[in-house]
Length: 127
Image 1 (cartoon, rainbow, N blue to C red):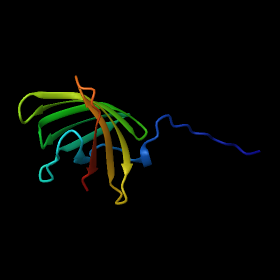
Image 2 (image 1 turned 180 degrees about the vertical axis):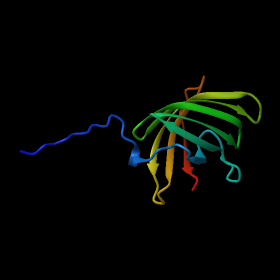
Image 3 (image 1 turned 90 degrees about the horizontal axis):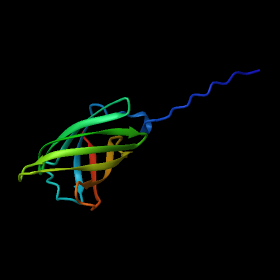
Image 4 (image 1 turned 90 degrees about the vertical axis):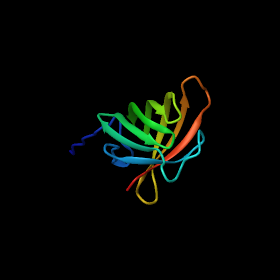
């Protein structure tokens, strides 16, 4: 008689990758033009299915985000100061993908507080 052990993982990470310590740059956005010389740069941290980080560049003086991860989906709330003055905040949901080069890509749908317009951005991992 054989013995079988079943292991269930409630939240399995995409390809076993972790976002902790990874840096991404924005390559496209439907909300604004992306400056290829100084794109918005995101630093991610992750532990126990919680993600957080910071970002700066392009139109943002400084920004922060916090949220959760479930498999290849990341849901966050964010807030940032604008270089033009003022502030913005909102929510987003990102899908983690792996590119042909092995680097991660985040495809994000987001909206700003007070505006129901859904925007899409793509960020790629910095090697």
